Length: 134
Image (spheres, rainbow, N blue to C red):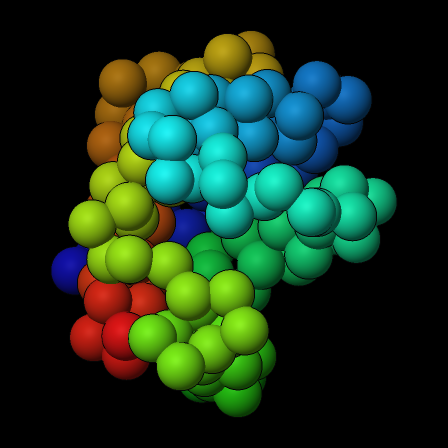
């Protein structure tokens, strides 16, 4: 699956300049399914926000075909696997993708339907990988 990695990375950078991007993502995510909000009941939000920023960067690099982040992707997948410290039922990954896409669309002033389709393809690579490793 190919997509415009450079355009997605630029979009992500614009989103990160918006202070509301990450909180909005979590607001959207937790509102989609009660099981998700339960996963975050004892969250240290400072750590979680940093982990998300890093995780999205790794996910986009991985989706772009770079092997340099393979170890980090494996670690994140292990954390969220059935036997990990923060297991995530694979059926919930669609909510993660949809929430992130909505947050990007709301926070990137240059978001277009074409760019959002590129984002969707890239995020699916990551959630498919996590699902396979569950």
